[in-house]
Image 1 (cartoon, protein in one colour):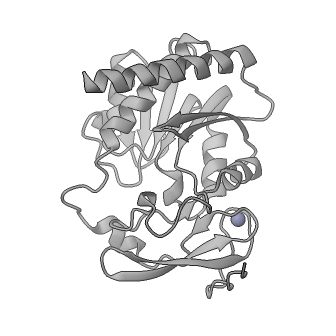
Image 2: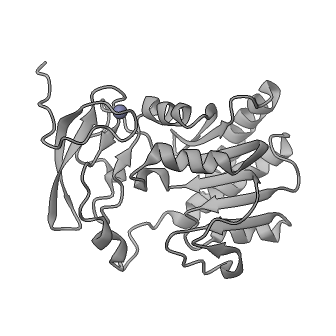
Length: 266
Ligand SMILES: [Zn+2]
């Protein structure tokens, strides 16, 4: 097997600092050719020097290419309910949804009596406008969620550090992202999301853990969605999650997600 050539960009992996190798080509926004870089060390997939990002965020896509947002929000809400039921979260908690988009998760949590807040650099919080701003809300949070955000970041470790600093003692950071697997994923991987050009940091499973560890966070739990590990839970290293709680959540997750799929077909 031949070793891939070095990536022509001199930018190192923004997760671990490793050297980038040439992976495969892509076409973003319908008109911008790119060459994906594979990190020699953490095996994550990156787009270095993303000069198109401003245009990518200033373009109004219609229809919205992210048609899964609502399904994803309902999935996260179900998972949080399991966390509460099995003692990983208190019945009432203070939460922050980072990069909250339309704020659907915040609305659902507010309706359940939680003290839910959101931060978004581009606020368009249709469902909870009074709870969201581009500035960070004051105080600490028992739960911080970053749903489909981390793969958009130019500085993933710095972002995780920011989130960690806002966790209350014993707080949970919940991150969703699909992990890159170089044996399974190629130029046709749907999660490259080339139509909007915003997925620039695609973590391998090892890369995600490495970034979290650099940010002073410990990976505690991964839960699947549609057959793949998708939702990751981190805490500060000094706060673990009870083993029995994790086990019950895993078992309940498997059973209840199966039922949710059946209900969707009913
Ligand atoms: Zn790397």
